[in-house]
Image 1 (cartoon, rainbow, N blue to C red):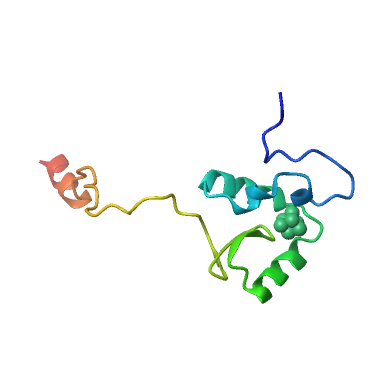
Image 2: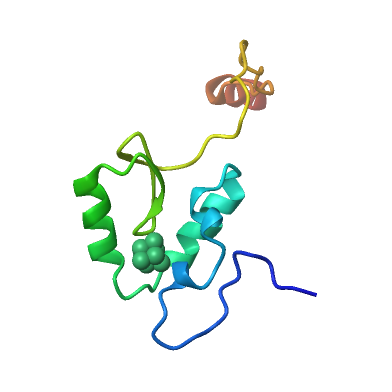
Length: 105
Ligand code: SF4
């Protein structure tokens, strides 16, 4: 049995991204992207890595614990597929003022 590709084996002095499949840092899956970002936490060169990626305007991937798309940092990778065309209705919740009147009656 092999370890998941995003689970970094320990090797003193090695950078986390040098210990796992590099594809994790360029993954399509939002879960894998978050796993790659988590691997960067605690990296001794995180700040330099992020600064370099910002300067180079990296087009893609996780660098310095951040996800880059199109040269800028984005908070989260959106899953594939189109967004909903019509918003989902929220469950009905009566207004607080109306509830108060009903309770007083
Ligand atoms: S911060 Fe940069 S060097 Fe460190 S693990 Fe992440 S991608 Fe690799």
